[in-house]
Length: 253
Length: 225
Image (cartoon, rainbow over all chains, first blue to last red; front, side, top):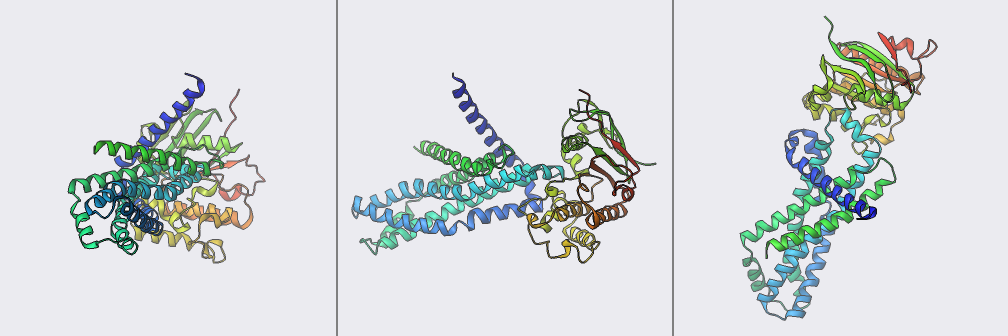
């Protein structure tokens, strides 16, 4: 293998090791949430990741719900069963979680990575450590837990708007009998599907947080790396989210 | 009988050599270093962050590397020079309360009480009293950041306080106030040991020396090549 290939492979392996290490560290130090400052940062993270993303998520969900519903009608005709199946499998199960995760990755993932990179460059992480504050507990646990809580809730909100408002708005453009449509849609969900969906969405949250934290915290101590950390977090997160989605799709075959 | 908090015996690192010290509860010491790198290497060795090439560092009679990390760091507090160790995305008052609340060494009410006691030591015209508590640390002057990191230690109440270049490049009123705060902390906590890492040799003409009244002072030697 050439030196350049070895270097790239080494970087990829190292990134996966660091990201997995952060995830394991955060999940094995959940008792840090009993500390008041850690809990406060966790609430802030849920607010930044979940509540502040409501507006862009709402807009995207309404637009996607309306577009998908009208396009499905045009493609599949007025048969309720086929339309509901397509909406559920393509839009609600695959598209909505990925799209919401990309919104969170672009907002919170980039913010977390650049914030941690700036703290590292300015020596604040060392400062925390020297005050006896474990940076893993204070910086990583709240971000991982915050994303793991906020992302599934935000995705559920996105799915509810797509499923609820999409057909309603589309009915103003194309003919849809809303009563039977909603009935067929909601009766098609199973508990197993819901549990799998929650699991996948939580994994998306964990992937976003761990990727952002590893991209931010392991940068060299130079200012030039702060924006690059954000860029790395988004690109790496994008690839890892798609990989996670593929794995879940294969699991449910 | 006096309690020895920390000691160094014939410690040598890549940045200094021959460091010998014995820091007792309630004492105040000064270590003079020739560069920031040397100062940082000294603090790292004393806090158990970087093992020395030679010699031994002990904390409360036990090798510093035998202490569990969390217990070791809970006993020590370091006040850094650059940024004072304040976290830039927390408001100033959040920074001041953070270590004490994190270590759960005091209830929130006690933390509030300690903070107000420390702030009451400052004169009304001090920058700290100008509603800066609700600002972010990057709005503070170099003096105010250093004072903030001292107040944070006054709230935390560690056993050993190590300051990195706290008094460097300051003079006049700012220096007086920092020294007054240090003295007040020592009165409040009679068993608190303070170690000032100071850059440049302290000579008889140095304005900070008479005020510091060090019980002892060591000067780190550069390593022999």
